[in-house]
Image 1: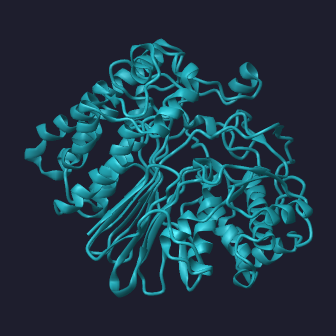
Image 2: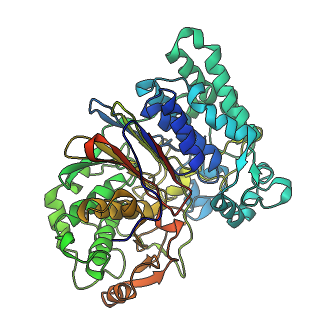
Image 3: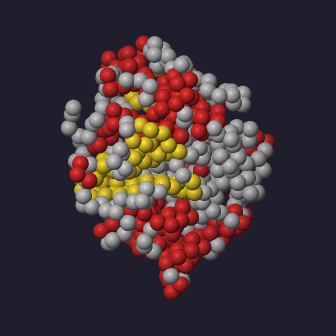
Length: 566
């Protein structure tokens, strides 16, 4: 077993891990000031919307999982639906069934409501206290990380489509460089407006203040600016979409694994796919196989393909689509699906679904390397009382215009829907797109929770599965379990428009042995090489239960993730 590249961080009091070191610092500052894991997680999530605003938007999505010290676990979807003005046939009629770029792919921005809902239910601090780091980072600026600089450079032409986006992300008409001080003063003012509105109602108590911060976005100047811009520029959002919006709160779905319980979000995202893959793999003696050998990786990849086939044909907003999650997560169904996993050969493309579903659709077939997905980040926290927080906030800033004067890009997550309303994830007024972000937890046999998650689009559940197997089957230390090389299949139609599939294609990090890749090729996989380590393979963060009641954090070297604890 090799030594990890990054130092494992352990503590006994509290811990936070985030997709950017400045967000981790913002969250840890809140813990040190006496806040709990929910306060800290919200602080880190808001900071991610500033320091990684290429990938996470303050007005985007923010799915959250919270487990209290008493053992109650809930999920907050943090995901808005399509505006009420949407004509479900319009994209088929006007765009050939595609989801167009720009304002028309906007769904109701949900992140502000999700963060504040978490604070209202389980936090202890004000919005102003937890938003302090995000406000300061937006107003005063911070040194740009090289990954953010590279994402902006890759999407420079898209940023140039809208003057407001270009003025922020291409300051002075030039590409920002790694290390440049990056400021988002309008975004800072938008956050400060929410803080100020809360302060104005502080005499009414904490709950009244939090409601005022929420109203500042959904009923105040920010919401009015968003709606006015949509009305003037062909967008679909209207005032009632914002004023009537409420997050959805539900228990997680679950399955047993490694003597504990895996908790995932429901089928409004791809969360159940993670549990389905784990259920399939429980039927094999993985520990007896060479780690990252061809037999191990073949079982992994084929299990993922079987689960993705069910995702493609069955998953959609459960408020609109009957997704049989209980059956999909049953041992009987897993046993049935194992009969379609061939040990001696790979499916050449995506297998058929395991249940009757609408007629199979022919996806767009890609050539060459799959494009990087519109991406995401992650934050988790555990406090000294045992509260646990896990969130995967998202939404990019290059697919839709910044609302002038706000620094905000209301959620472009409509790109994860299908323009054909007959698809399970097809569009409809009020219907939520199927999210890729899916925060999760594993509950250890002693009852302690391990929050974990990653960015990466359709690679998310693939990276999360490999981390779990490394940690719980091969019993690696958490940091090493995160750092081990990964593979990913691209046989499935991509979640994001134009939903391209790459049948049979597997990408593998360069540290995986050549004879393993040759073995996968003999089994029928088409294997392409990634670099030794790549952000495209996901960037898992986790806080694992350690010996003696300690906490052990793992942060991924593939991105600017960071862990802090005490």
